[in-house]
Image (cartoon, rainbow, N blue to C red; front, side):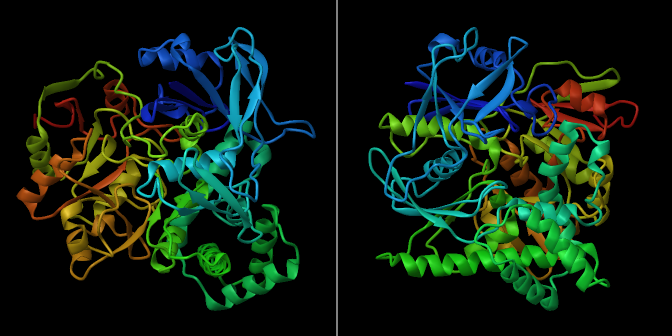
Amino acid sequence: MIVCGVKVSHDGAVAVLDGQRLVFSAEMEKLGNGRRYSALGDLDRITAVLADHGLDVGDVDRFVVDGWWSEDDGPPRIGTLSAGRPVSVATAPYAADPFTPAPPPRFTFDGIAGSPLAGGYSSYPHATHHLYASYCTGPFAGQTALGLVWDGGTLPRLYVLRPGRPVTGEYQGPLFGLVGDAFTYFCLALEPFRKPLDRLTEVQVVEHHLGTAGKAMAYAGLGAADDDVLAALDKLVAELGVESLGPEVGTRLAERCTALFPSHSGADLIASFQEFIGRTLVAALTDAVARLDLPASLPICLAGGCALNIKWNSMIRSSGLFTGVWVPPFTNDSGAALGTALCEALHQGGDPALEWDVYSGPAVTPSRPAPGWSARPCDEAQLAALLHTTGEPVVVVDGRAELGPRALGNRSILAAPVSPAMKDELNRIKHREPYRPVAPICLESAASEVFSPGGADPYMLFDHRLRDGWAQRVPAVLHLDGTARLQTVRPDTPNTRVGRVLEEYHRLSGIPLLCNTSANLVGHGFFPDVATATAWAGTSYVWSGGTLYADEQRTNRV
């Protein structure tokens, strides 16, 4: 059975499952240099994306649309276009989970004439897609596990997931009363994230809102959590005296903290609120595990945009509460199309374990380099030698794009990590703020030698620290707070060549890692082709499909 999942609103995407195998997941921002967080835009894009992958609308057995908010007092609907004309897509609600074991709650709708959805479609609640996308793509599929769903619009929602045909999820209620956007609103009330929104377009407001939490997580490295601020936050939240606090409470807390601690920087306050939320999260999970009285310790699957916060993920992992912690690389809404398709497959009695690969995004679009760029064959060993001998960064646009927001070697800028100036150089060419970190991509076999805790971390979703002596050897990957957002890879990692590049770089340099940051235009998704990467000209080199492209105006080393 072929199932096509669709995310219509922001982070729009189309994903296809063939049975329990992921065929592809295409996020709109990764097609043709789309803007970050792009919505689907037009239902006709479903047809176009299917065609790009050799499929027709008639090949699809089930269409599924991700659930969403109600824009007024009526049932949930999303405004979009179909063949250029305005339409309204009815969906499941944002959340609708029972407090008893049950399969994913399914809603069905009549079709939209003249669109790929003309034959009717189903829909699942937004929170539900997060839950099952995490569970079914992780190492605990087929086991009893806990699930935690927490995104900007929801309270942290705890579930017990039990295997079977179908898998069932039992909602345990919220852990505490802060929606994820409370952190975003807190940061938006402080410099440098405070902006007059009336000067921004609707799209710019969405981009600013969705992009703030990740930047603020990095900005917190300029400050430090303060015990007095933490105590004040504990008191202020308790004084609010309600069970469920909307995102605006973040604004109120920031204003109160600014008044109480005028000598503290915005970075100090953000670091303190981030730490406060992390501690609150671990304490609530501790209480919940005790309350559930489970027969044995269980693993936990994290889902939702809040699981992009590596500080909170690491606090959960180091708590010792769980036998394992899983976070998928598409934990935010970038995985919505995949997740809602999974819900339909489970409803049809599918196996809970999905066959998938993180490099299942769009393929490189065939193109020619910009004028003035030469081309020559270049294998992984030659690329490693170039990185080692020149010290220059190289854009990689190779194979299929990564799923989710993190570049993991196929749409990356790679660079030698040995110079402290490299982080500043990468931020400069990307027009990013100087406080933004550059991640290390490291051979899995060497990760525990270089990092603590180290070990396999393939998706850049946890905090690590460099072990003694390594900060001096690889200063470019050290964040302001002394941590690193590690990604590990093996030489035989499927569908990427970056592991073999690393293996050769390690052999040449004695260093088992490289700098890794995403390859994209400011405010856009990953580079889709060589033409864009060479026209951008932020680096002297671009590597794609075994070919090295070089800017002849800047270098003769080809």
